[in-house]
Length: 342
Image (cartoon, rainbow, N blue to C red; front, side, top):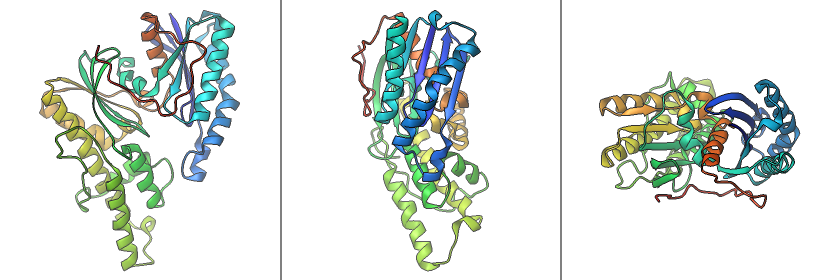
């Protein structure tokens, strides 16, 4: 079985081919030019997808050394994401489905992140708890079985990834903010500034990072008021700010995950999505998992960030259950991961 995966939800144009359980091609074109604008510009993202998607598909076919007629199904992200970007991938997939007479399979991007752990050699057994921390999503999910989920909690406002980007912008750091804050925090004192840790001690599993972001903003304004000429980029103090902010984020995420594992008596936990590449988050969850005798699963970096292999994986799982889509499938920019317990 060969499944084609297509991912164009944001600023990565990605094509992957999955043969049985093996990735035989994984091509990604990243749109680095968005750094010039301090964030993703939707119209420019759409145009870039349109420009490169055909050539990336041909490159993937060549790399996998197969003919396009050998593809058994086309899996494509139809949400959530930027509407224009989604439409490029979806319409390309529909054209292939129609032309090759192969099934079309719509894939929820969040669900793909949640199950991406099954692309690694070290796979969790079911049930497991999945913490999804990507650019626009922070969500805690109990995976009872494939396609059977119980949503335990999600972010009320800014996701963890959005908070990283916005704090980085406040400090004058480039987009995306997560990697650069992670790098600078390595030499900073995470205990120097006591930023709040929102929702850490609540009885539910919700998340909120908007207040933390605002707290950083007020802190920076206070420093500027006291010293109008203060330049954060010219002093090592910026590393302390990064470390203190990052510590608040990862403390909340790790505590909620461990708390849920204890309450639901789950031994397997997973962290997926682009923010799972954060070194501090990986370190603290690894430590807490060991302390609580939990089995931790975090995909490799290339699987953690947006990619088409996880889309192809969901396509394979749906293909096996004959869960196909028709050509009326529409892009849903606000698509959510829902409870599917039955």
